Structures are given as structure tokens and as C-alpha cells.
Image (cartoon, rainbow, N blue to C red):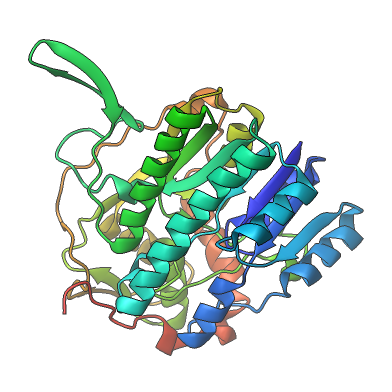
Length: 383
């Protein structure tokens, strides 16, 4: 399969490239280094430095004999994106190339504007490039469970059938995002659905929960292939942050009462999910939606798990309930359905004490790299 990965330098994009390449697919990656530049600007760089994308592709090629073609550029530039499509002629395009952070989108007006422009124009450009160059190409877009918010009803897998005044119809499940970033992801879904209805394209929208983990099987062999592992408030996911905080002796930052409940998954399971979506694609004219999670936890439950495992390893892990900088429900109903990917063949890696201990041991090697000042910056939703 010819696979084009947009956002191929990211926490998910880079290991996805190796996952597909390692299974014999022809992989092309694109990135504009937004995340690298933004993390330098905000002084919240990842735990360990990584070679640039061209260098990493070279390291992978030397180790495996497999080639990953790299393009550095901005896919909001339509002519650039068209040139990549013409060169790669993808059968599958995987869209990670969005500003990925809710806190970043809430820092100020300029970063909000960047989030809107980058995320919506990139998705629009992909749709047009597919239509113009490879109309049968399958679009896989990384959505987010954050699109749904925390409704007081069960969250169906993307769609809901509604009966009203004696009639029935199927609609996209109602969305109510908790940040500007999540709002742009809702608009992504709406854009895809409009052009699928209009042009008969095909796409899979993966509503992913927060991801945790530092390695995949492909990246574990060489530190230089490690995905960018962020532990800061802006780009780090909650469990990754808690592991680093525990190792640094920094109290775990639980926002408010800590009852916020979400669906989570291991980084290795993201690889499985995207691969299953690609190798078992949506049909023509179909917007297929999967809720990409494997387990549901509250923030308090995650903090208690990290505290227990950290204590077992000899760390004095404290939990600090701090004022919540976000506008969100801290106690709520949350029951998402997530059977679709299991039915496609997903074999989940669950969050056991052994998995947490492995994360502690992996991160512990880079403990001296931790920048304590990057952990919490107090970005507020309401000023």
C-alpha cells in the first residue's frame, strides 16, 4: 500500500510511519515542524531530543533497509500538498497534521486563530487533493473523543438514530467540545461528511482518547527513533505527565476534584487502530467513525494508579488537587461505546501495574532531562 502520513514527525505520526514501513508498505511523511518550534517557543520541549525527520528516516533506513520518503512543508499551502500527492499517489492518507493541543488553542487570540486556520484549511486541502489526484484514496483522520464532550447519555460510536414525531433518521452524534481545539475537530468531521455526501469520497474518522506510552516495538530498539514524549501542560497527555511528575518529585496535578472521566489507550494500540482502519478501509461514499479507546478512567483513578506503582518503586508520590484552569465538568456521567475497532481485530494493551512500571523504568533513564518549570504553566480557559 502507498501510505501518506501528514504530521509524520509527531508523537503519533512518527511511530505510525515506522509501523507501516516495517510491514512492507511504501511510506511518505510530511511535517512542518510546528510542534518542535512551538515547544521551543513555550519552553516545553520533550523529555529527550530527537533527530529531525530526515535524520530519523535515515536511521530507520540504515537499520532496516526500508525507505521512508520525507517532505518538509506546510499542507495549508495547497500547491505544496498537491505536489506531494502527485509524487506519492497515496492509496491511504493519514491526517495527523493538526495543531494537537487544547491548552495551546486557549493561550491567546493569535494561537486560537492559528488553530482554526491550520486545522480547518489542512483538512479542506486534503479533501481537494484527494478529489483532484487520487479520488479513490481512503482518508483516515485523527479525531478526538473530546468532540463529544460529556453528555448525560451514552456516547454512541459516531452516529445516533433519533426517533421524533413518528419518524426516524440517523445523524452524527451531537458534539459539544470543551476547547477551541476540540471545536475545530468537530468542524473537521463536518467538512469530511459534507464532501463525502457531495463527492462520494471515503473516510474513517478515529475519535481517539488521550494516549499514553513512550515506545512502540519499532521505536524501542534505538533512542533516536523514540517518539517526542512531552510531559508538559501544553503538549503532554495526562498519564505521561503524571509519570514524569512522580519521578521529579512534583505533586501530581489533578485539576479540581479529579472526577473528569475519559477513554484512554496505549500508544501501541493507536498503531493497531490506524493500521486496521487502513487495511480494512471504509467504502465509497462512507464516513466511518470509531471511538478509539480501550479503557475508561477518571483523573483521580489515574493519579492513584501512578501513586501506587511509584510508591512500590520507592518514590514518594504526592497528589495535589489544584484549582482547575479549564472550564469543564469535574463530576459527570461518561459511557462511550467502543466496539468497532475490537470487531476489526484490535487486541488491546490494558493499563496494568506492569505497564506503568515499564513506563517508570523507561522515563527514569532520562530523569535528568526533566524541566520542572515546563510541567505546569496555568493556561486558563476563563480569564
